[in-house]
Image (cartoon, rainbow, N blue to C red):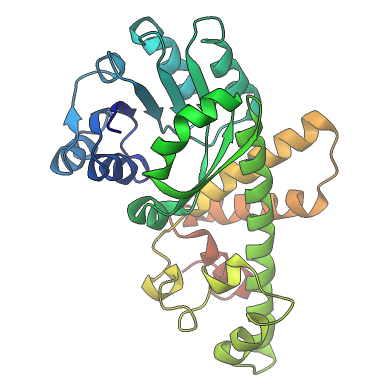
Length: 297
């Protein structure tokens, strides 16, 4: 069934997601502050407008994809007066749990369904409509949103009440950040031991070392032709964004008293990598940092 969708935030992730909604037969009205993003969205069949409020007005479903919690709260407050009764608002940004819960609370007494539904899959998944959505909100909101999410991804998981989607995303990406460093360290050690990349990959990818950071986002060129390592680490998922998510994990750990020593150390490594000027490279490029000699390339 076709819906009228307002999409706010048409960047590297939001633009392809909005385009996939158009491909699925929905009518999409979009807004972004960047003219180039608006032009790309327009070329993909999105009707572009001048303000976030214009994108939200009269929409059955509103999707936001923004850089941080402050912007999400600001946009949700901006559109509040324009959201029609019975609408659904979905935020697919990756933000802190507290901001997500505050965003839900803005509409809690208005009969408007809300979901925090961050994604996993990066720009490749956004383009191919193979994202995984981690959703927080009521069961009714999730049932309402699931068909919309299905047009942009391959899987949607209802993780619990408001903020639970963000909690799942933060935990998932802490695993990814840690495992990506472990995989990169193993390849660096293998290089020092005279082991070829292919040999290590063929063993680890079918043994107990198997993980997404190895089999999909392999940090060395060759074994996985589609990994960013084969295109000079053009992201994918930028190291600066990984750092953002790792910092969210450590903020959450501090707030809850959780002990995450590996998460803390991985955060420090990505922070240093970013400060050395590598934030715009794929996060798997941290192998250059771990090699030492490649540090300033």
